[in-house]
Length: 77
Picture 1 (cartoon, rainbow, N blue to C red):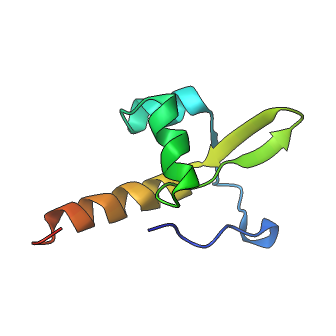
Picture 2 (cartoon, rainbow, N blue to C red; picture 1 turned 60 degrees about the vertical axis):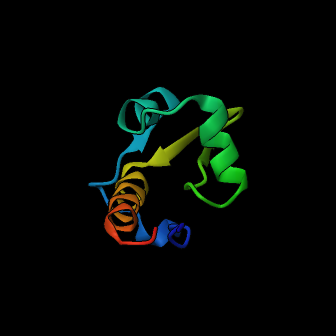
Picture 3 (cartoon, one colour; picture 1 turned 90 degrees about the vertical axis):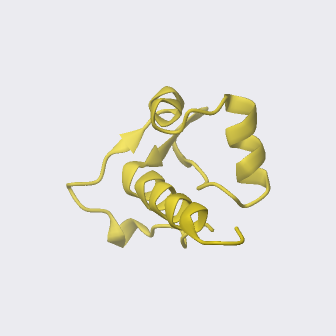
């Protein structure tokens, strides 16, 4: 369900980083669930943006949400 990781050359000025609290506003799940889903390959991995600091690309979260909605609407899913 994860898209391939974004490469540095693919980053545009329109891209925006989201912190964990911002991700949790869009995906109403707790920290433990989000990190479990990451380990299971069910959620986009965060990007290191500094020492001890990670963030998600907004478009990767948007793509995950769109795929999640599409899969939920598919019968037998």
